[in-house]
Image (cartoon, rainbow, N blue to C red; front, side, top):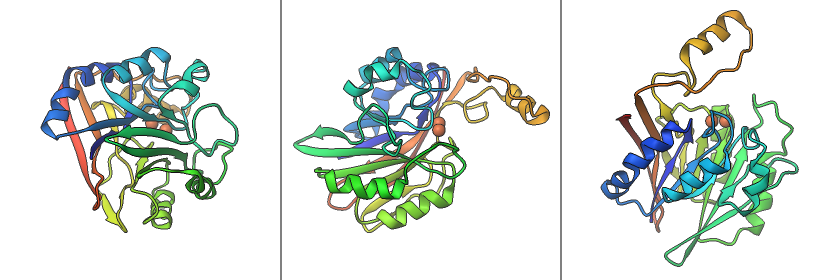
Length: 253
Ligand SMILES: [Fe+2]
Ligand SMILES: [Fe+2]
């Protein structure tokens, strides 16, 4: 099966870009399933019910989150019934630790974990959490979205679990890395990148972010407004022999 997994969706305009282009992307790349990280969809932080429904209506059948998982408090009202895997190493939270998706009589398990380096959250160990979940998972394929800042933590996680899952895909930095590889049939990339306005700092308003760096004063920053949108992610071929390739595209809104 061929899966397009999109990196962090930033801002609702990106949903418009997906509305216009996702079908043609699926056709061109012979994609069966589309998954995404949706943690920045609503105003750059979190996911509203409205935007969850819109992503679903585009045929995105599984979503993962990150440090902004609960930034929009309304998610607590729908996450239990949604096709969303929440970061499993939050010590206590609503939502699914393992999300199961069915395709062609195959079951895919999706797990979302948060790294602990530089994120300043009270989290359980992602390694121990994954060991615990592996004992519970019953699936033909297992995909992990590892949402973390530190490249070392993601890479260490990959080498520890290579051979035990089908893909370990990094998110959170919003910058796509060029290190995709397969080890022991486990696909890996340190970061899939983001889907959002190209002329931005990680999807956010450039001038405001520069100001924040120069002044040290924390002011709320909004999603950048731009005409050019980038879509970053990976295409996974999960069969007997798993394969990963980077995906990038650019569109003018
Ligand atoms: Fe993000
Ligand atoms: Fe994040």
